[in-house]
Image 1: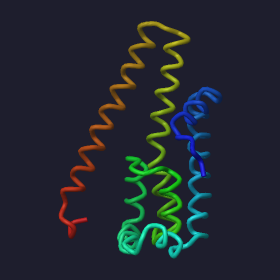
Image 2: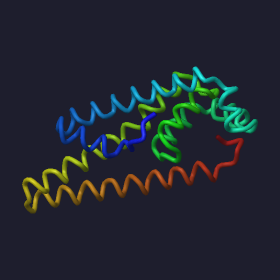
Image 3: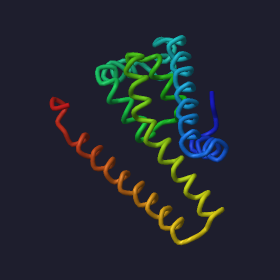
Amino acid sequence: MSVLPFSPLIVATVVIFQSISGCLYALLGAFCAAVATYGAGYALGRDAIRRLAGSRINRVSRYLGRRGLLTMILVRLVPIAPFTLVNVVAGASHIRFRDFVLGSLIGMAPGVFLTGLLAHRVMLAVTEPGAGTLATLAGVVALIGVLALGVARWLKGISEQQPGQQ
C-alpha cells in the first residue's frame, strides 16, 4: 500500500514529463494503483473487511453499491479518506468494478489535471518570471478556487436532498 500522497507524485510526474504528458502519466499511474488495490480488497472479501470494520459496514456497503458510480466520483473529487483505503474497501464492498473504474477516472481527472496545471504554471513562474507568467499563474489559482467553490455548492445541494430524491 502506498504511503505517499498523490499530489507530490503528480507534481513530480509533471516536472519530469511536462504538462499534458505528465498529467496523463500521473492519471494512468493513479488509476493503475486504484485498480490494483481494488483487486486486493476484492481478494480479501467482505468478511475480512467486516471483521475489521464491524457489521455496520454491510449496510454502508449496500447503500454505496446502489450509488456506486456517484459514490466513486464524489470520493475522488473530495478525498475524504486515504486513497488506498478507499480502493480496498470499494473492492470488498458492493461497488461494481465498472462503477469503480468509471467513477475513479471521472473523479480523479480534474484533480490530477488541475494539480498538474498548477505545478506547470509555478514551474514557469520560477524559470521564466514575468508579468504574463505571474498573471497566468494567478488565473490558474483563481480557476481552482472557483471550481472548489462550485464543487462545495454541488456537494451541499446533494447533502440537502431528501433521501428519496437521490
